[in-house]
Length: 313
Image (cartoon, rainbow, N blue to C red; front, top):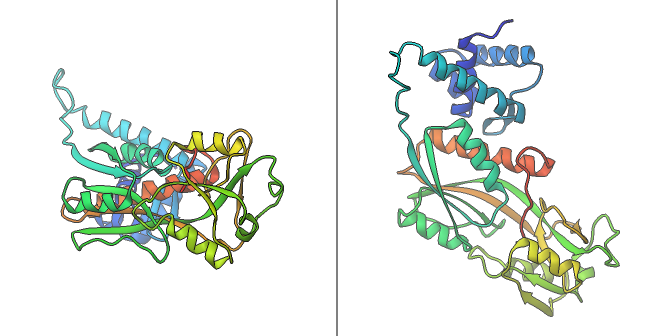
């Protein structure tokens, strides 16, 4: 099968819609026919272009490359009918004011979203407290946000704001490489009762109460706790120097003389959340952001494409 322009338009429509079914509706075709066409295109190219998720589809790394080429070809074809010197038609960009707490998902999300939706102009601001994220959305000072909360302590907001969970990951522990438990495949939280803990400050979503509740459930109270406000690199330097240990997210990539191990039984979980103002964000934009965020998280787990170092909780 030779690829034709109509095939490229199908791929771009699927990517923009975030779903084969929604793309079929836009194209005026049936979902089975669109799915069959996608499979034929993927078979012709020799690799999957989209990953299927519970909420739709997101481009694979190969798919991102193919989509970028497809959009370039279609843009060139669309420009053939214009007079010389007329230039391409102006692209009407919609500004999306995006907030983010300290999260490793953000670079991958933006990389994908900008490729898939060149009509969106992202301005990004970072905040520490997740409760501030909700407040800024409620005050209409932002359009969307990436934040975290904890199972059983979900972020609260009014009906003017909506949210979707991107992924829930287990909390791990970061230890000096020479720690006596560092060789373990996993470590029980109770075995760390006598340690000095370096903990991030109150994040407005339940931390560090979540940590202390998990310690209580494990049968101890953390006696030596130090609040640590610096960045992730400084935190790992402190841990490597033997000055304490820390709870970190499961996607954390250890640096230097630091090891990261899972906690037995997953006593602490962290949920990544996409929030948006319903009056500011249409369904297609939400789906594009959600798809980009879930793909960015999967790539962090796999350590490929848009991977980056994660953060302390």
